[in-house]
Each structure stands twice: as structure tokens, then as C-alpha cells.
Length: 436
Length: 146
Image (cartoon, rainbow over all chains, first blue to last red; front, side, top):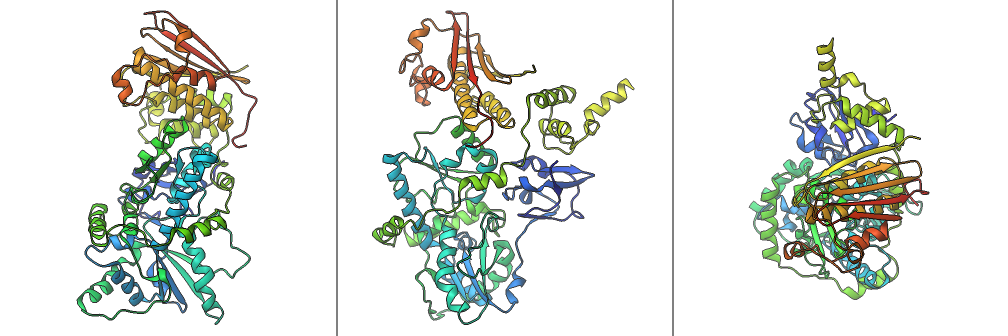
């Protein structure tokens, strides 16, 4: 039987606030939520961390399992790894001022992602152009950037795991670089370092990441953009007000710079827009993503080479932990692109040399993900299938969700598996009373 | 021996909902722990045949029968039927009209693709009397991954 708890690896849940309306039931893509005794419970191992339940809960009972900004006050060297979505939260403000604001908040280093986004893009192009000849991976290749998409595939579309582009995600490239170049400088001096991921979504560090034995592992903490926004906005306003703040010194190329290309990544389509691939698509939104994955599974879309999926509408700026509305953020990004222009800065040859050395190869085997997300549900036999059909005949079939399951079919499955009782169905109860 | 059978309705000329029946079949099979390659083959056959019904056949149904050693996918419709089945099986032969082609269909790959992905295929059809396509899949393969 599946394990039921209120909180998962990715979301926290406050039982006192839950009113039991069950609006989260229907939006959960993996059907991991049930309402029992007027409170939502979760089948923990089915949670892929998409954050749809956070978005839909009117009571504010669900929140991301991220930390608040108060963790910053501890005595350590704080390094912020910044998603470009953060810049989109400040219309009319230059990215460098946002990063400066972070420094005023107490981060010693602010790592901008644009450098790593470019590395990733180049490596992805290289893999795709080689795949045209070698046919090592099946078309269409699927972007590995959105971790929710990868987990969704592992959970619900394991046949499509070979389609996931086997190139390290930009965040992984960024973390590796920081861990190997920046952090040792501090650990040698005996200082504690903490990495803060500033994220637009509740995806924490992947549970499949195992600590490497080679280096000491720094503490890693995920912060939601909305967690730090109230504090950060004060500092950014101060910086805007004070004219002529002198340029501050940074030591690494990737500590301050941001580009139009990078800010575009916050939007749906931003990943592929500047890639050298003609046959590519960008799909955003959970419903749309699932429908496209279903199509790919049926053998369609093989004429497409690369698909960028984002389970949040409009891309990462539609993330559930953002501070301002996605359309306002999109407007900010568009202005930023106009200002910076598009174009890359890194030398392709250097990146290709890294590619040849295998520095973009993902170490994780996709099968590991399947084991984590796929193997929980016991397979149904022909007999159980028949039983489920029998239960389906008894119940109304209108997916009213009054029983606390997301739809009739899931309820029927729960009944057969022994996780729910048939009398929990209102329709069955009413019929019994009539006959009574 | 127990069998499990379920069928889904296909509405002709409804291109918006086209593919739903095969997605339902696919999800059903996925919950039963068949080999992922087998599910994919069935899904491809289901989709190709469903599109044929939607494009040419009018209303129809898609049904799946799960037995202990084999699966049977059956598609039937009350459409115009196939005049020359042998010709229709040839790669590249298509009776799709310009509208269909505009939507990206009509490459003449449907029936050949179904033949390629199923273990046995049987077509019954006469002009103006509808079509029944029955495809058989043997299943030595159990377990989700390789």
C-alpha cells in the first residue's frame, strides 16, 4: 500500500489551513493527492514537485519546501546562484543592480547563470548535430532543463527517457563550476560555505544527486524568489535611488554579467530561440506538456529535433514561487532583450573542447530516475483490471471528486487496491439509501 | 482464463479530439506493466488507425482485449470502406484529400506502419460497408524497462 503523508520532498503542507475543498486534487498531474477526513493527504513518492497544488490552493495551506531568507544570518560565506527569472521580477532595473541588491542583503557572491546557459546551448547544439548522423538518440530530443518535465517523464512516460537530451543542465554546470573553483578558496581557509539556489519553482536539489566523495560538500539551500523578494526589493530601490554607485569588483566572469540571451530563458521559447536548430518547438504548461508527451509516445513529432518543455505556463517566469505576475515579468524580459540585444559571448571552440573531454555528459543514468519515480505503483493484472471496471460500472463516472480522489477511475483503482472503501462514493451511498 | 476488454468511441471528422481513444488505451496498458516497447507499438497502431477513422471512416470504435498471452486491438467504423486492400497496404498510397494533407496527414504510411508495428494484421472491408482492422500483439515481454 502506498505511503500517505501530508508533506513531500518538494512541498510543505499545513493541515490547520486546509479546508478540504480539494481544488488541488484535479490539478495534480500524477494524481498524488487524496482528501481524507476533509484534509488533503499526499502519496509522497508520486510527488514530482511541479507546484501546481501550491498555485491552486486558496487557503495557502501548501507551500514549497524552501527556506526563508532568515537562514542568511548565520555565520558563513553565502553564495547566491541566480536564475535569470529573478531579473524579470524587477521591470526597468538592470540585472547588475539586482545582483548588487543581493550583495547588500548579505550574499558574498552572486553567480549569474548566463555563462552556463550559453555553455549548455552550445553543447546541446553539438549533440543534436552529431545525432543527425549517429542516430544515437531518438527524435525528438527533449530538453532536460525543466526538472519537473524530466521527473514527469520518469514517472509517467518512462519510454521517453532515451529522448531526454543527455547534456548536463545549466544549473548542474553552474554548481560544478562554483564547487570546483570558488568554494575551495574558502574551505582552505576553514570557512563554511553555503550555496543558495534562488529558484522560481519548488524543485529542490534532485533527490537522485548523491554527494561526491572527491570534495567536501557545501550545504545547499533552495530559496524561492518570493521568499527573498520583499527584502531584496528594498535594497534594489536604494540602489536605484543612489545615483553613481561605483562599479564593484568581481573576480569571475560569471559573477555579474547578464545577457539578452540569458534573460530570454525565463520565457517559454527562450531556450531554443537562439539555438542553431531549425526543427525545434517550445511547449509550456502542464496540460500542454502532457499532451505533447503523449503524442511523442504514439510516435508523432519525429520530424522535430528538439522540444523545450516547461510545465509552467509561459515558461519559468510563470513559476509558482515568483513574486510578480508572469505577464508583467514577460514584459520586463522583452524590454531587457531590446536593451541588451541578442547574441553570444563565449567562444564556440572552447566549449567544443570541453565537449570533447566529456564535460557535459550527465553522470546520472536515466534508469535511476525511473527507479525513484516509476516503480512505486504495483502493476495491475487482468483480474484487477476487471475488478476496476466492475467498480466503474457501480459509480457515476462524472469525476465529482466528492470521495476525495481526483477522478472516478483513480477512485476505482484505490478501492481495488484497498486504499479506499466503495461506500465513500456519494453516488453509491445514495443508491443504497434509495433501495434501503 | 480471464480476459479484459474495453472499447472507446471514435468520433469521425473530430480532429480536435482525435487521438484520445489511443491515449486512453495507452494509459490503460501502462498501468498494467507491459513492456514499454510493446505499449509503444500498440499506441502507434492505435493512433494510426484512429486517424484513419477520423479522416475517412465516420464514427467508429477502438477496442483493446488483453489476454494472458496476447493483446488484440480492433478498430471498426461505418465508413466508405477500402476498395483495394492490397493497394492500400502499399507505402505511399493514400486517399487523403488536400485538407488532410494540410494538417500533415496523408503520407500513405498509416497501414504500412500498422503492419510494421503489429505481429499480425487482418483487415475486413468492402466498399460502402465499413472497415474492421484487427491487430494482434504477442507478449513474451513483461516488466517495464529493459
